[in-house]
Length: 209
Length: 209
DNA sequence: CGCTGGATTGAGTCCGGTCAAGCCTTGTGG
DNA sequence: CCACAAGGCTTGACCGGACTCAATCCAGCG
Image 1 (spheres, each protein chain N blue to C red):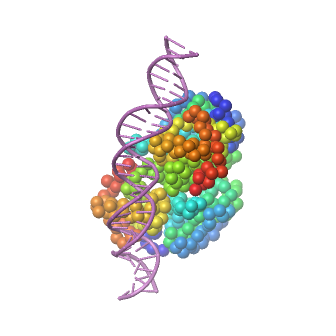
Image 2: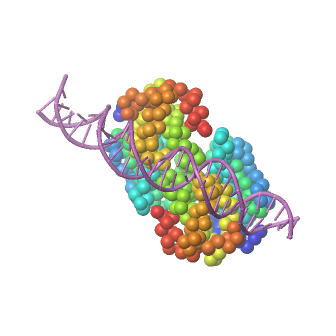
């Protein structure tokens, strides 16, 4: 568990401790649940980051979302998971059996709220996919990521391919845009997995565009 | 109210009749609620179709989703609506005050489920936006629309611009793709707002691609 | 140090966007 | 029932941003 990963701000309190769930640890790249697997649990990130992934018939890959400390995921209503969930790096996950929620009114409500928040994020994501240029998408992605982390130096816990599959771009285009933003002095990379927003103002306008 | 509009299959029973809500009628293009408006109601389509729309800073337009008979919409968790809702054609809408839901456990649960279903649709939509070609997007759109309607001849209740803004394409591209699919004998238009799938098999493969 | 897989860079292509006419439904009024 | 307008839709020519293919580069690690 690196300091960088811990820098993510939990958006909601841990449910794990208070609820009859267990805590599991996963290593980088490990699958937490599979696409098509029965959805009998809900999950909360305690430490680390998680991605949800789906492959279509042609093998094209789409990232549904990234989840960091405090986030719930696996909130499907259907019988099975439409996306797989995978650990981005080493992480600890609280696993809560769905059936234990029945009748637990506040838990139920908390999960409904989490579901609605998810929906909001999905719609925001949609908006971005529909009408933004590659440059705007990448700027938006970095600003969002930075917003969730304290400190000037932000972690970039996912690889370029993951970013590409999240934004609906190719890895080459993502790479070019990052290089470009850096050349313009809007961001600053240190290594591949660490960055700073050197001009948050311009970048935010770009992202919002 | 035309027969075509009524052909949509309600996916969930009407809540309006059973609940302390009122029913309102809207004409084509009328706004049901505005972007940024306080979200103190939830809505269910009784007759007709509805679109949710959002304009970004640059004036780019994105359709969030289309809703037909039986569908709930306006299910935001936040204080205000992120998208506006507008009547596609003449329609009747059940309006349910959110506060009347407190403590009504089965209603609450029904709405959570509706929220989760929305989330699923949003993710499906996302998948499509990320990785599909214009041709696949349009095929997918038509197959989805057809699936929700009985009878061989399907209604196309929205205009080309709405389809474009839903799929993240331009109106010209949508038009070209429709023309192309028709030229290949996969679909058949009669007028601008009515179509048949003449080769559902091939079309579905295209859509799934 | 030397590997190795991820990331970058470059050249060329193509899909979908843009700009610009026209066409056709649809609805209105004579 | 037809004429006419008006908006929505289609079509065409051209352009450009993102993709593809391919060759390095280099950070991270043993």
